[in-house]
Image: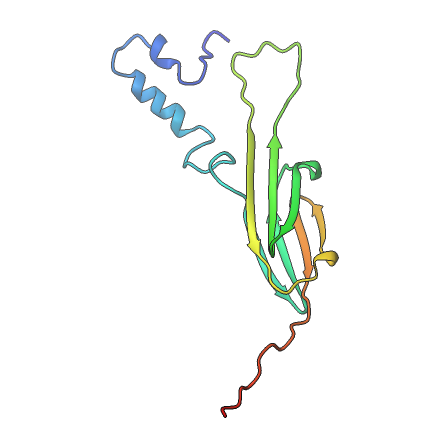
Length: 147
């Protein structure tokens, strides 16, 4: 345990000057945030498919609980929002360094001609599946006769 040094603290303890930036760079290189894609800076991925007379929206949400997801429809827009918090309770441990992550993200999808009262959603194995039935389109076109 004597060789364990908290994240990005090598520069303060390394005896040869000039190497502190090098070791901090190595720590940053091997951290979870490289290459700058993580839950804090990124959003979840979605796929939208047209299957027969309905749309199928699939969102990748690994590790997210059902209670952390919100699905709303307003002004023909489907909004999927996630408020994810990570907490680990392990009392009695002697931590040198410990981190938690919290994120909030959302995606909007424009919907037209759908049955709002028949939308279904299911979360299974980290994949949120939303089934959106289409509404029958009415033909609003007509020919105008010239007088």
